Length: 99
Ligand SMILES: [Zn+2]
Image 1 (cartoon, helix red, strand yellow):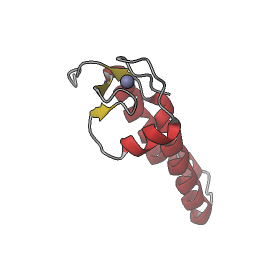
Image 2 (cartoon, protein in one colour; image 1 turned 90 degrees about the vertical axis):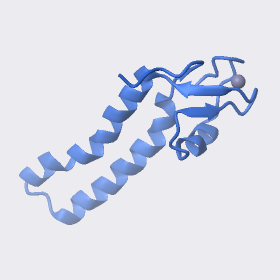
Image 3 (spheres, rainbow, N blue to C red; image 1 turned 60 degrees about the vertical axis):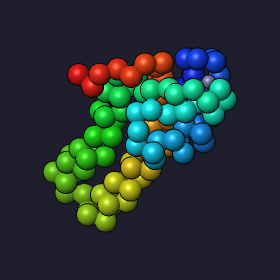
């Protein structure tokens, strides 16, 4: 779970999950109200993580798994990725450049 670099409070899964959908790098700490940024390292991890559902179906298709099962699996993996994302959030006091 992300920890605020300013006040040191630990954000809850629910707070982080809600903030994820603002799609901004700058997020406000619910406790001290200062701006926090998603660290570069965790942004990289997040982008790798979200790629998983896009790749997961490839081996199943080559094994001839019926499309219905693959669709269910896709749905489940998207849900798991979304639910797991708050755990990968790490915060930083300053905005780090993308590259
Ligand atoms: Zn804080």
